[in-house]
Length: 161
Image 1 (cartoon, rainbow, N blue to C red):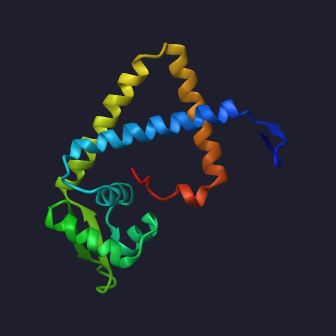
Image 2 (cartoon, rainbow, N blue to C red):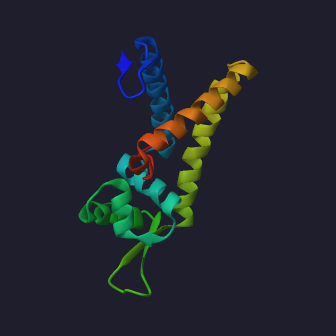
Image 3 (cartoon, helix red, strand yellow):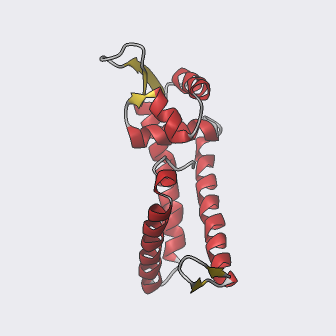
């Protein structure tokens, strides 16, 4: 397979390796959600992650970050507020603007999942030789930089998992 823009030869085995790594990392993310024991759904968790990244903000900003409509955000916020993970407020400059923020319970939930992921990732990395870990971290850092340059608008929103 050849990339026209850079005239660089990319092999199918290189793409296959990245596709396999993608599936592996998505698997880590999905397994970490099992730590929630059904307390929140995947869309609800996405909102919690968005609020972790954004901090207290207008609900319209959360909707934009997640690529969802206002009504979807309202429904998600209703459920998360009822569960005690999100609180609503008003913008002091414009009382018609509804703001959202994580509660300590929401923060704890996100931290629990993130810590679970970190434990699993550490377990996986421990199976590699130190030089392999360094090379992997360096390569993934470069991959992120290139992906961020190629698709900056797409990568500014919070990750779905």
